Amino acid sequence: MTSIFDENGKNIPCTVLQAGPCVVTQIKTVERDGYFAVQLGFEEKKEKHTTKAEMGHFRKTGTTPKRKLIEFDGFTEGQVKEGEVLTAELFNADNWVDVRGWSKGKGFQGVVKRHGFGGVGGQTHGQHNRGRAPGSLGASSFPSRVLPGMRMAGRMGGAKVYAESKRVIRIMPESNILIVKGSVPGPKGGYVIITK
Image (cartoon, rainbow, N blue to C red; front, side):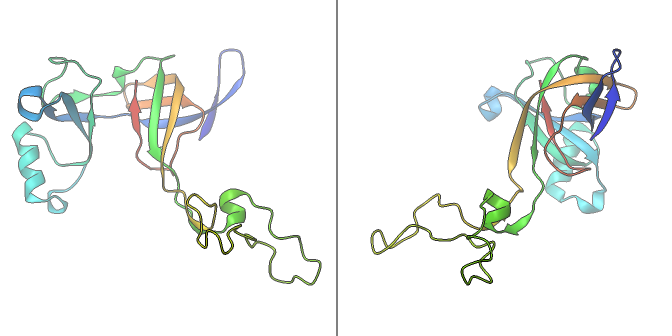
């Protein structure tokens, strides 16, 4: 994240996203695939890191291998053609976009960090090692099991997150940069999917 100043001198927190160039690697049709969608490829990768099946897929459209392939259904038939390059000029300033990404993975965490538990009663009454423990789970001889959905320790983060209605503050079409207000999910350098 970073911040920029608007024309009134107000400091706006924002995130800088690279929105292209994306190449149309395939167009799915209703006759052939049963639905209509446009597949876009982003960020080139070397041929030695590409499988033969993927290479055949890219050779069909005459494009170089791409690292990420994502399908979008927001296009209309005839709007784009295979091999066409799409840039950040698809978006306009003051547009609203949805950003979908994967949150930072934090590994296996306890209940205090994962769910905000307070621990078990501090360090008094003879307790010396229960400060961050979950406490009782509430199940006894009936039902003799842990109920589904119980908040317990486990893997935290690394989940799909939708950041909806982010305002596009500025576009830099020469470098395919999109600046959106607020934060987006994921680490620095992570991949996100931007939709109108």
